[in-house]
Length: 199
Image 1 (cartoon, rainbow, N blue to C red):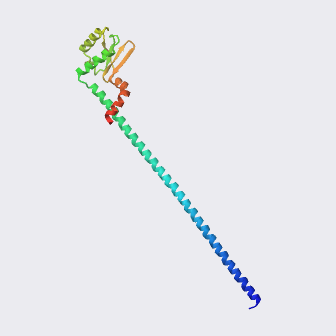
Image 2 (cartoon, rainbow, N blue to C red; image 1 turned 120 degrees about the vertical axis):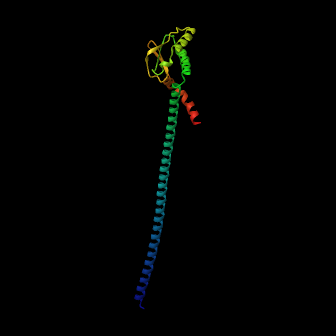
């Protein structure tokens, strides 16, 4: 083999060796790039998965909160309906009292609110028969004993009072109808009614 052939063979061998080294180096870089890309992709997938799970949990929590609020509103509305019904029943019971008990209650109420003893008593047409001459005579006699004039009269005028009465003296009216009295006392009575109903 001549020197030129040897030189040519040496150049070819060195070139092949250098090409193989470059190819190996390129493959190593490719593997490193692929590994890094897979690592970054896995990190992005994990981040997206965590964000989606967080969003799902947040939506689930919101739905649960809304459901709990709706349930509380429904319970509160049902309780308010029961309380309202209780007050309606109380009004109905007062209106439906037996005549003697009703007259006794009216007598006590009239004695408590009459200022001069000369006022007019306005009642509903339904209650007018319960305000008998005997009831008025008894109340007026007691008012006279208290130093008042004892001249309460039953007005010709009637109003829908739902039980009880309106006491008129001149331009001043005192509403002692059952509905008005329950309305005035409702704020004080409602907590007690709720405690009885829901304890």
